[in-house]
Structures are given as structure tokens and as C-alpha cells.
Length: 119
Image 1 (cartoon, rainbow, N blue to C red):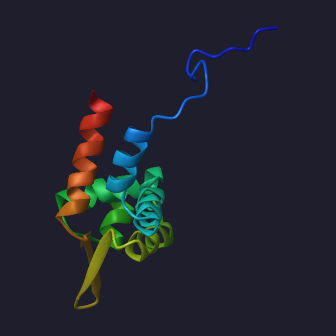
Image 2 (cartoon, rainbow, N blue to C red):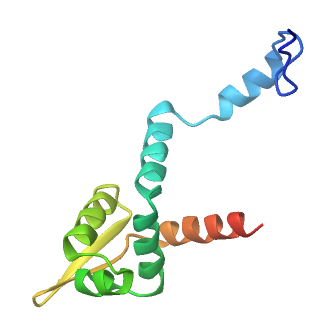
């Protein structure tokens, strides 16, 4: 039975010039690991919903819980993951804790992801 696949090379070959060029330009493994952790932290639908809401306005846990029909403890758990990954930040406002996106890079990632899935 022939199990030849169309998506693999028909014969083993190595393109040394291309490998040298790519090797010189690749980011360090530690950076790649941190990038993977960032995407992992963003890779949960509830967290993406939180990020989408925070891309529009800063909100407290109570607001997010109401908006997303989640419990405050569930929202807090997701925010803790996002905060650990430096995706969101918070500030105290009296007795309230107000969350926002950590920086403009996060908004850029969200917008690029939205554009990508819309294509």
C-alpha cells in the first residue's frame, strides 16, 4: 500500500544556504518560549472575550462578570492568568480594581487576529 503524502518532500534534501539565512534571523529560543506562553495565555475563549471587552474600555471584575455572564471568581481566575502573562494590568480606584490591556501591543495582536480570521 503506497502511503506517499503530497505534503512532504519526495526525497530528503537540505538547502544549506536557506538554513544559514534562516538561522541568522531566528529569535533566541528563550524569546520563542515566551511568545508561545503569550499565545497560550490568550488561547482560551473566555480570555479572548475579556481582552475584547478591555480593548474597548477599562472595566472592573464586576463589570466583566456581568458583561460576559460569568461569575466574579471565574473572571478573576482568567484575569490572574492574563496578568501573570503581562497581557492585562490593573489599578485601584477606591474599593474597585480596574483592569485594562497592558499596552498597545496587545491591542495590535487582537486586531491582527481579528483581521486574520475575517479573511
